[in-house]
Image: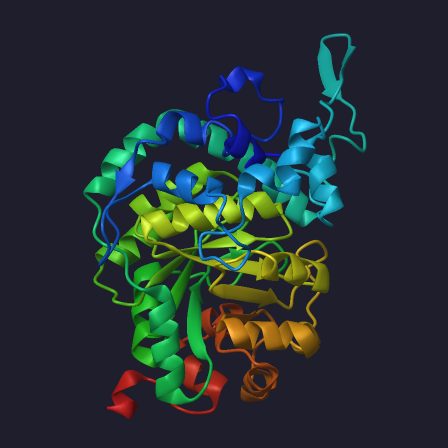
Amino acid sequence: MEAAALATSANKPCTSVPAIASGLRCFRMNFGKFSFRTPGKQVQSFSSVRAQQSDPSETPSSTTGDSLSSSVEVRQWESGYSYDDIAARQGISIRRRPSTGPPQHYVGPFEFRLENEGNTPRNILEKIVWHKDGEVKKMKEKKPLVLLKNYIDYAPPTRDFVAALRAASERTEMPALIAEVKKASPSKGVLREDFDPVRIAKAYEAGGAACLSVLTDEKFFQGSFENLEAIRKAGVQCPLLCKEFIIDAWQLFYARVKGADAVLLIAAVLPDLDIKYMTQICKILGLAALVEVHNEQEMDRVLGISGIELIGINNRNLETFEVDISITKRLLEGERGETIRQRDIIVVGESGLFTPQDIAVVQEAGVKAVLVGESLVKQDDPTKAIAGLFGKNISPDVFH
């Protein structure tokens, strides 16, 4: 369990931690003294988060979260459960990396490997996560966290992603739009051949998008961090969400350096304690965290974590890529919907939104924002496509 090691191993060498996915395990020991400036706030440090997390006066309703030193996840980690064991107990079926290495076989001069259940991805999301694990390891070698910290000291301040969504929703009396700059997807292939991320981003902004989502995964979505950086440097004012498969705390720092104002955390991939720690790190870095769920169990897990401001409901099953817009309505019914309203959490509807009727359905369910990519980016004129999606012009000029 990655984040669990943080709560118990501040004074242990990293070699004493079990061989598990280690995105966060050395973080407290090596980087606890780092401090960062966040917009409109005093300098914050990671040591202050540790102090808050271990404060015995903390209650589950506090903004800094439960006491992690006594959490169930930490006790499980200390008792020797594997990462996948802990994840499975929380309903997470996605394995962080292959559980067994592919055996080598030789026939004369030729070498080949046999696939087995332990080294073969069970679905597209697991395939993406396994590839991301190796990709991040290589990126960390080139740009260690110490180097990223130095870059962050000189990075421009983040824009308020949450405030932008609230303002747009109030202005239009409709869900705020997070328009996605997206070239391709594993299920649909290339969505737009003449893909110019900066031009598309500016068209979205002109059409009334409150925020933008930028795909940064290269292998499966043909995105890049260079696209994110280029959009930020082009003068686009909309806050930017880094749409990435985050499995390691290092990725939060890298997204911040590249110009992100918010990041995506996927509950189907991250255990609860990872989400708790990553949202704390996001607050220190000035990043908003959009925590994505797609079923009741994931929603209940996320609602059990204090301090969550944004929850995305993905109508697409990330394991099968099947889309069902009724998922949003189902997850916002009853006590869950009431809890979200009481906590003033912004719910973002994701996937399967193509018409004004689709927007109306999720708005009636309680959604305050929508994240839309495919139905916009495929159109010749993304600005007009936004008006078509909402059934009216929602650009800022109309409301002045």
